[in-house]
Image (tube, rainbow, N blue to C red; front, side, top):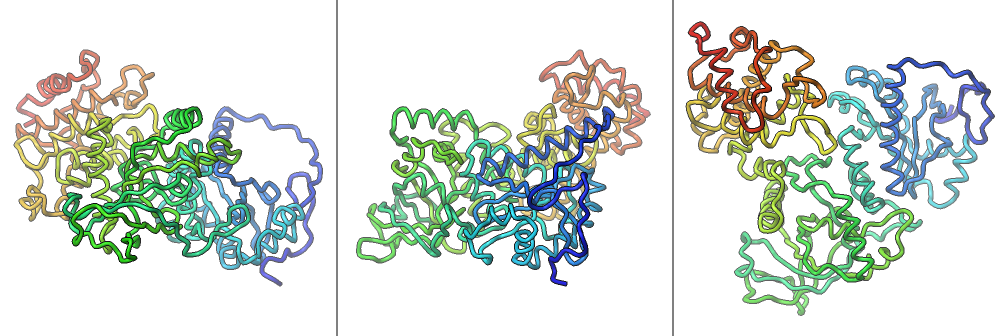
Amino acid sequence: MPPFQRSGKRRRNSSSRHWGEQMAPKKRKKKKLSAEERKNRRIKNAHIRSARSIFRNMGFERVVEIAEVEIEITGQAGEFDDAFLYENILLLLEYTTSQSSDVTDHAKKKKILFSKIAANQKAFLAYLREKSSTFDKRLGDSFHEDKYIVKIVYCSLNHVPDTLKNNVDEPIYLDFPFLKYFEKLASIVKVSAMNEMLDFLQIDPANVAKNGIFPKKSQSATYDGSILPESASGFPSGYRVVSFYADAAALLSRTYVLRRDGWRGSYQAYQRMLQGPKIEAIRKTLKAEKRVFVNNLIATLPSDVYPELPNGKTADITQLSSTEAVKIRLPLRANSIGLIDGQHRLYSYYESKEDDPKIAKLRHQQNLLVTGIIYPEGTPTADAERFAATLFLSINANQTKAPTPLRQEIEVFLSPYSPTAIGRQIMQRLAKTGPLAGHVENYFFDKGKLRTSSIVSYGLGPLIKLGGEDSLFKLFVHPEKEQIAGGNSEQGREAYLQFATSAINAFLSAVKANVDGARWTPDAKVKDRLLAVTYVNSFLITLRLLIQAGHKIDFESLKIALHGLNDFEFKSYHSSQYARMAEQIYQKHFKAPAFA
């Protein structure tokens, strides 16, 4: 039997979906759902709406005729919850709102179906065409079968273990934080988010058609510009700095941004999320005044861009004594230009499915001034990103000051041994394991949780600094302790992060064990809640006082000492009264000799 042939006759009944023209289903009396079932349905529907909005805004069409329809491949039956089509890309989506403990079983049951489709996409498309006349008509003869790209996208509301992703490796896992990121991005810049989505889906944009036409391979565009001599740039040796004008459409087709809430996996991502109102305000100005913003964009260019002098030779910046005119050939390659500053100005020209005709015209007409930095060939990615982040921070320091959380995250990789950087990394770990897990803001869409910048600055930073009698570093034992303090031991720093996280979790666990469970929440609606910045900072300062005084800080000793903490008058302390509250907790629960 051919791999995608249906075996046996399909049973037709009112509860199943069928290929092609549909039978009218019989009406059934709706089952009355419990409150819990209604809640779960709302969660599921919201999850599905989020995913659908991403692809709709990017220009995909929903393929209803193959969604939730049973397919059978060499005896393996199954179905997909949803399907989307864009030009020659077909996405098959699987949704699940199961708890993390159940996701593994759900995905493993789909493994055989996933692998059969991935192994023979061409045959699978032929199977779909044969079984659904509507789908066959939708595809038509726009593309040769070899040009189609089929991707399976697994959308789980809850965490998917890495072990599962390794074992069931056919799908692209659109994890919930990534889903929310793309939902936000696509809601703001619409179709102009497509190249980033293709990168995420591991699809080369060069293999994707637009308006039925595939881009030409190895195509490039040439721009007139200028290059600085090495002596005039002030940048590290080998870094080339060029300036040129390019239309917004050309830049949008090539640009990517390292956003800190994104999916790219770089711990050095440093830019904030796009702000919709700011984008729309700029678009309004563009349409009203019909003029370009004159301030420049700052970007990194691919290392295979070689600025050419008028004589046709590649510019050698070490031999230049003054600024020279050059021609800059930019490859037509998506996600090749890293935008460091100016993302709102560029993305205000975004494309939408029902495109604004005025913006569409300006997108190709108006030229933006770009200052481009070309790294020396072979520059490690980490070094390049660190340089870009430093430049971004210096630009924002001279203009609108970057928000504290953003500056803290940048410091993690610019000064990884600083108290702020170590505190930020420990805070990220506390957010995942221990009594604060699930209660800390991790992503831009988290609401009603602990905001961490003040905790890092006033609670964690002093507690974990690399020296002092009141720091956890005093208790830390490691053969490379001196090198850690000098900022020269990555292995030792990692060990210290683990040690400090464990010690803080022990203290917070002892606190939690001595208070009413309902109070352990950041929800402001809960009376007498304890997960507020003021209280958490006070707990961390209390731990500093214990270290300084030489008290035991193991969980059992702390649990005993903190007995009766539930009756402490937390409400008597407000805002920045961290130290005064910590001193009172220390005096009441640890001053007695029995706890020394």
